[in-house]
Image (cartoon, rainbow, N blue to C red; front, side, top):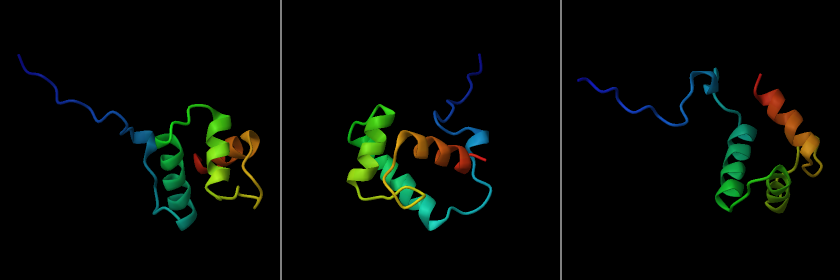
Length: 77
């Protein structure tokens, strides 16, 4: 019996990025990685973590649940 190779757990075709990441996107991704590695599991913990790192929201102000959701929507298009 032939077995299928294991799938990459987070590699999904719809998650690919069509063009190179901008410096902002790289910084945001790194900051999110740091926040999640520190144990954030809720949206409030994520936005608090981004603010604690000193990463400003897209409008230059602190991250809120609303600005985070809007930015993830924008970046996901």
